[in-house]
Length: 91
Image (cartoon, rainbow, N blue to C red; front, side):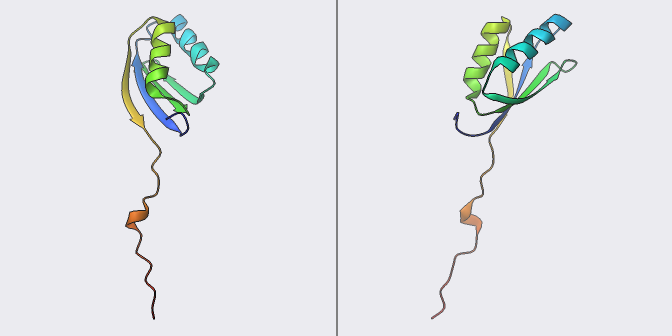
């Protein structure tokens, strides 16, 4: 799954400014993550990039020493070619 763009939302308890700084530093050091958003009040972190969601959650849990709960994972929607009208040749 590391080849395609993934958006993941997690819940991590960030109860102090130091925890928030540490989380930001951990995320910035991960090369797979292209964008991130830390919502401290909601204890929610959104990250986007090319990664395996389970691997990233495990790495964050180990580095932060806190429970990481995956709330949502969104994969990019690819156009489904089955919905297009079939090509008909007129003879």
